[in-house]
Length: 569
Image (cartoon, rainbow, N blue to C red):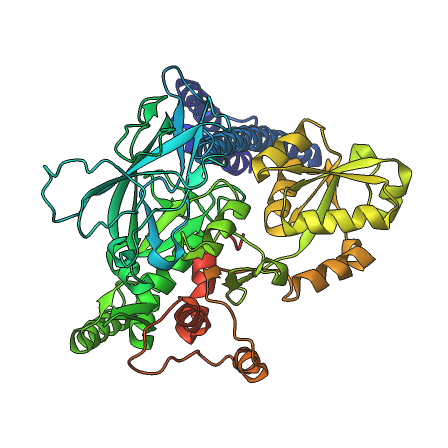
């Protein structure tokens, strides 16, 4: 009996015997103990008790050692996760700061002029060309500016002489280079001066630069203006005659922000954008849209093939769908469309770029709201969420928002100009000003403020906040009665569509007649795709993107996109 019990006890040590010298010595000792003679006498109950106690003690030691080892490994992994998250947040903040400084560069030594817009090889559409803007460190209201533009892709001779400053306007079909006075020097901006009838010449790729000058007092155009600065650096932009032309050359311009939630949109280890939003927009644009004969259309065959390939590219169903789609594309003589990701420092900046049509679509955990639809339209919501208010238990928070707000004055942090900012402002009014609202430019800034105790609570989308809550448990608590407040009801009315992330799409103005306004409403009610008459061009991407997003192929693949980006944990 003793021999059997000892063999049972030896099992865990046998597993460790080959790992360390210490375990080998213990194993040899126990083995010799088993082989040794035992006094031949009647076995008593105390022997069983002693053996059981000895066995349990050994098992407890082994289990304790194993548990401690697992706990240490868990602690190390959690520490690595937090360090990685902090590094990622710091990198994301650097990206946002660099993007924000593109239009607000500090003046450096010997650099007095900075070009503000358009910059960065912007891709514009002819009817939406913005004014040229710059910033001069020594600007006064009495300074004039000279602007020089060069058509970079002009077929004209590169050795064409400079025609000098003109007041008659530019014609880039006749000259490759043009210099003119700024039309609004006081505001440090100017329209592109075009001669009458030469509007079509403002297409292609252009370089431009600016210099400060004192205008001639004589009014003689032959007099050279007196320069007050050196020429600025060159910047470039391109102008396309229509949206399909720009999409053909540059792809669909997709704005995003690498900030609020790394699961939705961020920069991966390879330096490329990835996340739920990036996967979705790539599937919708590159997988479901086609370009042919100046028209952008939704293609159900291509969309189904792209969805199957995303789910399992090696499956027989996916290979068959891709083959069918390729044959259909060959017969229809259509070409695929690619996406071009453009980063913005904030959602607000991205929506402004959509409204001015500098980008075609913005996607980045942005809330669909009726009040934001100025110069743009939102797609159907593709990811529902709820706003949530979190607070620190040490600030008196338990489960009731009402009790917490009445205990003392508290500061709630939000992302500035977000829909959560709307809700927090309404909540402050409801509780009689006992809550103050502090806006921050991004989620990492807001998160750091909470950790530093600069704010007592944060109001954020639950898809972000719940993950943060898990990190700080049990110190942080979520108020479950936020949705019972009057503020939440007012906030829902402002949204109109409910809480959901959606794509913001550059769109043409909506029709004014009653019948024309009701047609889109009926179409949205019954989920009908928007259709354009054959032979007509397309002026925006709203209709084909909506058709793709509403398709069964895309809807069925949304859970897989969610799973791959760890949003279902």
